[in-house]
Length: 202
Image 1 (tube, helix red, strand yellow):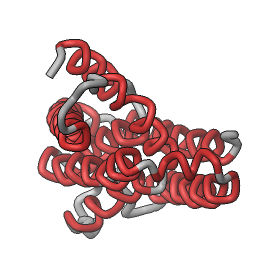
Image 2: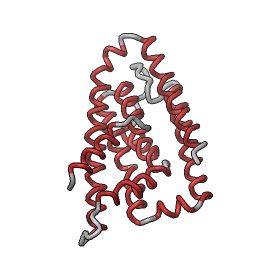
Image 3: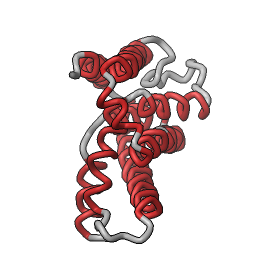
């Protein structure tokens, strides 16, 4: 496995996207354990995109405007739903003691759907992974699956680290209710803007 792939994959994983923002939000709002479920969910959400890219289904999404439009609108709607979830009482960033905690499965489900409903992920894998497969590779499919597995492992590790950092800052944030309110609004606006950006993606 080339150092170029590892370095490129690490840069891609470190870039803030919907998964990073969701994991940070859960870490701040619910603590480290919950952020691990968020990280696992976001990583699982990569599986369909990776398999689609490897199987060439991403080419169909690229060629079919209708298929891409339908999937991206579903993804945009879900991002807007997540923005509302953050703002409402009992949502992702509501950490008051009297609030009923969200189940780990709900956190994992939301993280998974965030990536499953992102059509750009499959296009990313279609363009990204083949660059690191030699033209004379004996088993290119197996190599692609291995690269996707490494990418997912890196995603999980980095997201858990993000969640841990957010959880460490949680007590300091909780001591400042105005900061928490500002963070809730900022995360909600970010998800809303990401949803609108995805909806207008060509």
